Image (cartoon, rainbow, N blue to C red; front, side):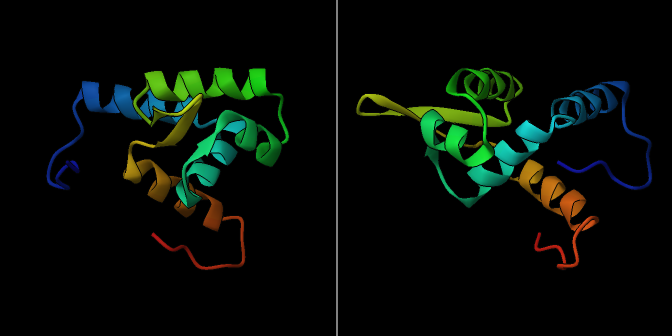
Length: 106
């Protein structure tokens, strides 16, 4: 739930936001969120898309998952990842739009 504009965020809300921004301070994690916003993916496909090793992307996904930004489900022998917080996608799109000629699509 958004913080009403007539009050300051609580220390807990500020801490949670700072932790999320900290996780998204990695270009690889931003790319992972961007890719997952386009649709579900397994770690191998994500690694190919973001240009990282499976092990490195797996570690990034584990951190994003612990923070509640992504989740996974088992599909056969594969684990499929998806964004668990659509607000994060909106924030990432808005931030990336600042560095692009395209208008944001939130």
